[in-house]
Length: 97
Image 1 (cartoon, one colour):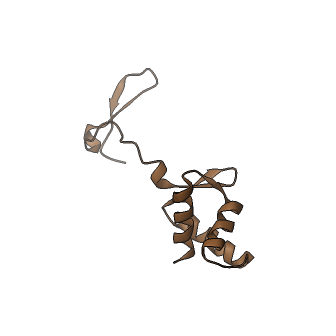
Image 2 (tube, helix red, strand yellow):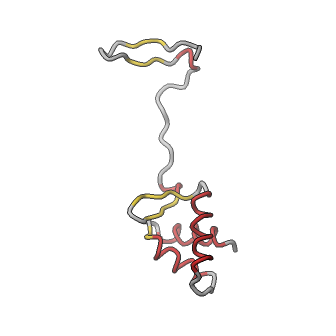
């Protein structure tokens, strides 16, 4: 198992965000490896690049599955989208840049 996949599984099983230090300890335990700063840095880098993970702030990591995207209002083309000016009046967007 890849270390980043182990991190995902640890978070999934926990059901809540974990502090990075706790997460790394659990990942290394799952992988039956001793703490190694270079190894932990590699896992951290892999998590940053993997879209499954979300940094929640204050040293906590979670998985994206817990925060699914909310649907946006309207599903039309750019031509159909509107935005409001400062007075709240809707203005149609122009097609050009």
